Each structure stands twice: as C-alpha cells, then as structure tokens.
Amino acid sequence: MHKLLTDRPGEKMLLLGNEAIARGAIEAGVAFASTYPGTPSSEISFQFFQISQESDLHFEYCTNEKVAVEVAAAAAICGVRSMAVMKHVGLNVAADAVMTLAYVGVKGGMVILTADDPAMFSSQNEQDNRYYAKLSGLPMLEPSSVEEAHRILPYAFELSEELAEPVLLRTTTRINHSSGVVTLGAMRPRVTRGRFTKDPLNLVTVPAVSRKLHVKLLEHIARAQALSEASPYNLVEGEGPWGILCNGVSYNYVKDALAELGIADRVRILRVGFSHPLPARRIQEFLRGCEKALVVEEGEPYLEEAAKTHAQEAGLTLPIRGKAPELFSRLYELDPATVRRVTARYFGVADRARPAVDVSDVPPIPQRPPTLCAGCSHRATFYEVRQAAEELGIETVYPTDIGCYTLGLLPPLSMADYLICMGSSTGTAGGFSQVSGRKVVSFIGDSTFFHAGIPGLINAVFNNHNLTLVILDNGTTAMTGHQPHPGVDMKQLKLEHYGRVSIESVVRGIGVPHVTVIKPYRVKKSIEQIKEALSFPGVSVVISQELCVLYAKSLKLPRGKPFRVGEKCKNHRVCMTRLACPAFYVWNDRIHIDANLCTGCSLCAQICPEHAIVPARETAEK
Image (tube, rainbow, N blue to C red; front, side):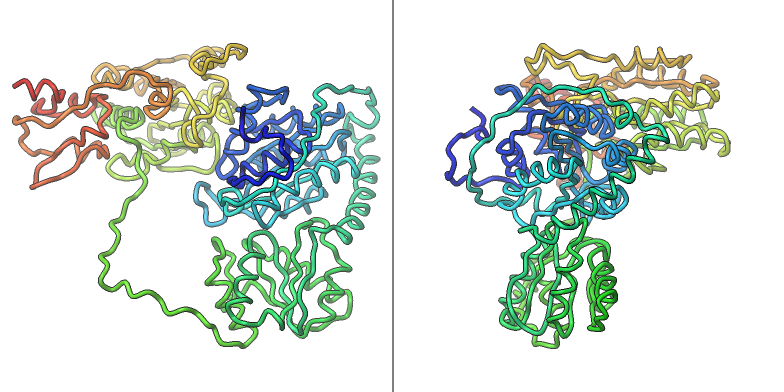
C-alpha cells in the first residue's frame, strides 16, 4: 500500500513537502487530479499517479497545463473535488482557462497549485505568481512549512466550495523540497462521480453571460475578503514597537532571525497565509501598533506595496520598507543569514552573526557545469546535425526548447541559439527562416512537442517556412523525472489502459512534406538522413528516436557493454572536443573512459579517426 494512503490519524510521518501536499489533498477527499509535470511540483503528481494505481483516485498526466486545468474544472463543475498541479510558468500556459474559470466558478472544491521557483533552480524565470491571484480575482493561500502545506489542503478545498471558486495554492521550492514531520489526519471519502447540470446562461461565457458573471466574481472577492480577515492562516504573534510582515518560507527565516538577534520581545509578526485578498483591516490594525515595519518576502514587493496602500488609507505614516538596494533584493531566494542581517540593519541592532568558519585551507570546489548524461542520445543527434551542416557548408541558427536537451547550449556542443518558453522552438524557427538568411534547425523534445510545439509546426507548414525541426524523442518526459506523455509506450510500465499517439503520424498529418526517422546511435546513416532533410527547400522534420538512458535503466532494459580507449589512440581528442561525454576523463595526459559511466552507446567509437575506441572485452582479449 502507498504510504500516503496510511489510514492512521494521529500518526507522525516524515514527508517531503510535495508528499505532504499530496497527503493533504487525499485527506481532503480529492477525487480527480491532473498535471503537466514541472519542477518543483513534479513529486506531487507522481504521488497521485502511484496512488491512482491502487485506489479510485482519477489522475491524468495532461498534454499541457491549460488542458490540466480544463479537465479538472469539468470535474469540479460536476461537484467532484479536483486539483490541477503545475510549476509557476505552467500557470502562464493555463492562464487563458483560469481567467474565465474565475467567472464560471465551480461546485466541487478545486485547487490549482502553482509552485514558484525563486533563484530558478530549474526554470527560465522566477516570476511571482501572487500577481495571478490579483489578475484573476481568485483567492490564494501560501503555507510556511511542510506540516502547514499538509494542513492547508482541506482548508483550501473547503474555501473553494464556500466561495464556489477555484483556489490558488502557491508554494515555493523550499516548501516543495524540504522535509518535515507531518501528523496524519483522517481521510475524507472520495466522491468520484458527479452530476453536470445544464445551465448555459451561467456556464457558456458569451459576452452577455460574462458581463453578469463578472459582477458575481466581484461579489465572491468581497466574501473572500471577509474570510481572509478571519483566516487562521493570517496570524499575528509577539509584542513590541517594531513590526515584520512576511509570508511563506520567509516566516521561518524571520523567527530564526529574531531569536538569534535577541529581539523577539520587541517585534510583532504578521504572517500572511491567505494572501489574496489580503486582510486589509488586519494589516491596518497591525501597523497601528508599530513604530516602523519591515516586509520580508521573496520575489516582488507584493505584500510591501499592499501594506503601504492600506497604511495610507488608514492615515498611517510609519516607515514601511522591504525591497531596496540596502535591504532585500527582488532577485533569487532569501536565506536565514540575509534575513538576520537585513533585520538587524533596519531596526538598528547588533548583528550577532556567528564567526564564519575558516576555510582558507580548503581547496576550492571544482566547477561542475550541468551536462547531458553519459550515453544520452541527444549528444549523438547534436553531433550529427552539426556534422551534416558542416558537410553541406551551410550557416545555421539553432532555436531550442525546454528540456534536457537545452544543455546543448554548452560547449563543445553549442547547439542552442535562442529560447523563450515551452514550444517556442517551432514558432521562432519560422521567424528566423524568414529574416535571417540562414538555414534554421530547431530542437524540441517529445513531451514538449505535445505540450506546445504542434501549433508552431502547423504555422510553418501553412506559411511554407524553410526550416528543419528535430524532434528528440527519448520516450519519456525526462527532465522532470520520467513522467508519461501521449507518445509514451505505457505497456513498458505494465499499464494497459492507455492509448499512444505516434509523433510521426502527427507530423505527417499536419502536412509536413519531408519526414525522416533516425536512430542516432547509427552515426553515418543519421548524418546522411539529416543532410537530406537540411537540403529540402521547405519544412522538414527529423524524428530522432532513442530511449532516455536513465529511463531505460529504470525499466531494467539491457545495457550495452562499456568501451575503452585502446593502444591505437593518437591523442587527437576528437571524442573529447566534439562530444565531451562525462564518461571521458584525462589521466597522465591521456583520454580514458570510466566503465562505470559508459553505457555502450558506441558514439565515440564511431567518430574516432583511428578507430581506437573499442568494446572493453575486445581490448581485454587482446
């Protein structure tokens, strides 16, 4: 039995933040869950996926976040508690649905989780999704700890049903990926079937209906405002003339800072957990008792600006500061040391920082830039595309996309020239083809192709752009942890009730006139096929098919025999300078291959000018 299905209320369990969130949703009776995977939220969906295999929870890995919201919204309007999970940039994709869903509302509770990523550990930006709550008019909750993330889910579903609106639940990486002790609660029985009541004059958003629904949304916001004022997740603690307003994980840093500075008895804290609508009266009452206030929040000055506005409306003139060159930055994450240092400076107390540990005798840590895995088929495809372009003597532009293959930007591969967002490789390729005068070769992964790449390819066919799209089909959503997508063979996971969509059939169905499927570990043949695609005047697609090596390992598929560098090697280092596979290393000025890392893909053996790279057993026999 999955550990999150443990039915022993009161028992304590050490959980990852994302596990705690999933457990909280299970306790709340969530019956329908959907997602497009994205770090730092991916583990939540994985828990749901596993739980769905041994319970009546319905779970879907969707083609993108917009679809995930749409299927969950349909369940919720039928009265079934539903949850859509995504990372912060996923809400950009889902925004078209979310903005109008706020008008339509729900009947069963619906939670939309958005996991923000301050410091961009695995993201292309660090946007602050609190502004989506203001933009949509939906209520937003923010937990400050793993345990609170668990406890807040039942509250979120109840809030959703009370307001008849979806609720946004915002987390950040430190909540998602921290571990904490959670006290299990009782599990509400799941209601998996609902009833749809036809009501087109409230559910079909033509302009006449939407004008009426906007009025209703504003009424819901007013009700949410009253609930925020009384919410237990907006709490005040402490006494003293100074005030700190904070949210999320920043609350923990503030508590530590006050204890370390010895000023806990002089500072009051307002921790905001129901962050939209903000509790205006409570903020004003809090500020009335303060000589000065500091706002501690990651990202944008969302809470700071609101506090200043509410202070002005109440006629208060105390200093309220937060984001400033000498205080907190709008960049990256906060940390305990930064919060302690800024708090000490702002309130004019001594910073009781512990002396730094002397590390002068410790050598610097070697730099280890991110790289494609040993044996990754993307490396082979990149090499073959570059080789084909060089042999044809053509200048190229390489738009790329979001996935493991984005690491192709680093030398020596250097196969990424432009990137905006998921799916942008197909759209931007068309623009480059029209104005750059170069051959455009764009790269996109299989999961990303289904997520957002198809419309750009359709556009290219319609407008007859001159480009080659390389679809890197490694049989899984590799970057976020091997989640399924519509092209995955689910029978490999011993799951029979799924369909499968052929990328080749989709591409041909779109009308692409030149389609080639390559096996990237067959180097010479792949180069010739790619040269044909690059020479085609118009839209061509190359589908590079090879299972992700880590995914293949998880499926316990046979692994190739490792290779080694033999005596024929003349130290030209073509393997190192053109491929830079992490299985290579230099010892005594000679190239060697780490047999523990080598997957036996044979890419390096095929490009070695001396044919000096051979299977390890062959060399041993000689």
